[in-house]
View (cartoon, each protein chain N blue to C red):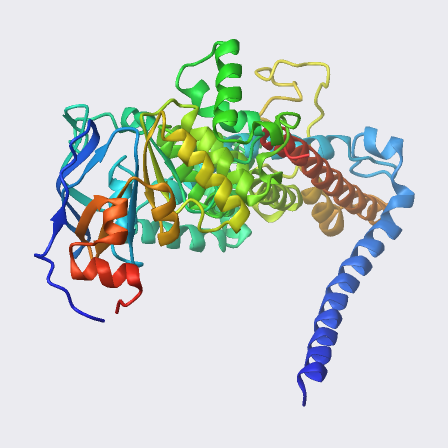
Length: 295
Length: 264
């Protein structure tokens, strides 16, 4: 076989494989959106869920998902940033750091239901947090942290050492060089990781069933004091998220329109993730351009 | 490869004012000994070239001079700058690097605007006066012969410049700090001949106000621009003399073989 022919075949195979990936993705997305979008309307997004009658919405679940995402990121991002900077910039090549890296890898492949049960025992029972957004956010941090740390570490390491030398040779301290030169350059990579993690958090159900709970008590969206019982910002209340709601509606719901609710909720879930994804990319690009003056 | 006797050494004494000197500098990377007893003095406001084959230790030696080998290698011996040993542990290395700037082999501008590339380190060193920042931006770019090419694009990304322009920007970035000494590690090796000759012209002009030490692989370059030349071989300084002596009448056989290409 000559080089030209084998090249053609290889190219063909690669195109075919990409085609399979795209086909799976499109059919999945298409199916969910086709079934769900017709039932998504303003009423669905702004009314409470119903336990026994038809016509329930997902207002609280949608808000809970977003709130939980924000809380989980607020907890995990600073920790992951610190750990990632340590591993990429400060950690020496020795067995301690090898152990740390391996542990992070192991942790990132932990099944989410295990994280959920662990969170249940430690946070809900031992620390007495009860089924709460806080317990859910901390459990999500457990399984979010390894991915985020690894991602930040890799994004930072991919910035060429020449940049570090440039900073050092101008008399800048290591910390200044990292925060003002290396971090901005690593930003697009970090952002991509953050988006992936957010998608995972947003769609997570198993870890939350045992920590954030399966009930969505009605809350007062006008009460902005997070320390009061009825406030929508109260982190100590149980909070069923959208993904948990889909699971629950499908397994133990007695509402007559369960299948409609679950399809519509799935569509909302996917659309929110898409919006989040595109929005984060747009903002990230803007930020990157602003910091690097790239036009 | 031919073997040479490293005890044969010819170091010319510098009679002018000395900007920087080293006494018995030794460098170890782990167990491997990279530099043996390098003792050189660099005359003020002159260009000194460090030449030698790859792996001869010239870049390693250069990087010692502003402590860029910290954390990478073990550097012993004295490096005297303004009557102080800057190789001592007590020295503020950030301060050292502000006085002794460095330009690297591959252009490494920050992913920031041209203006920010020059001013970023200045601001971080406490220079906040707008007029002063503007003045330094302009003079450093003019000194690096880049001003006319970029004066209308100061807010554009430095990464959009050509390789030669980027390297001159890096030189401008270093001299904006007003250092005494400028170290250059093969600054033109990644550039085309036109950019190279621009860099050489720039260095010639800069040598009126700066002491320049440059590592180069290119012997024509060394003979064109430098006043003094040191020849390194396998971690040893073999010969150090006025450039014209090195290239016309070398004292040591190894030097002669190297510059005539009859080496190894």
